[in-house]
Length: 201
Image (spheres, rainbow, N blue to C red):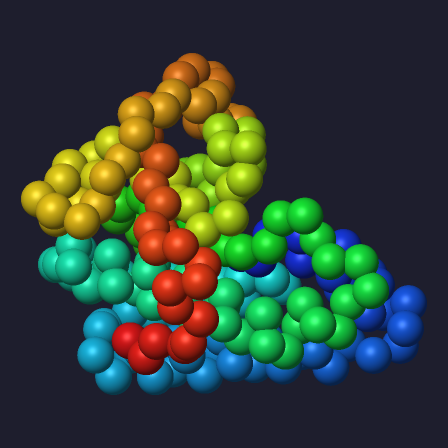
């Protein structure tokens, strides 16, 4: 699973111009603490920070409910945290604010590079490509996930509260750019006014 913040470059640029990135730093720090807390109930590795999000690695036997709770929990937490501590500090609020996600499954290989544990494999590449493709499939990509057809069938198809719309996207450098079958999922399904509080995992 990979996720990142929509419009992060625009928000960070404004804060850098004002020489005060503390609001951005605060949100990133709170996301880090959220992930650490989530590890108490779900087994996963917060493998890599990408500057405005993370790549998270889950064991093959993770159940679909746990993955869904991670998607919705992160979405609710980020919305509450950004609306309380980041957006009010911006003179120009971004038109699009939220998180986008990509998920793929499959084997990955562990290696050591410069004394650091790293992972390589097709699932990581595809998850990142899917996450990037969300904005091309939705007018407002906020709080949406693109998951491969196999991930949806394996983890989400039996969950009554998860709805996915069929999509095909060409993924750069994947199978010569041929259409990749996936599902687009909303990670926040309630109206904004219904809940604005952070939700613990």
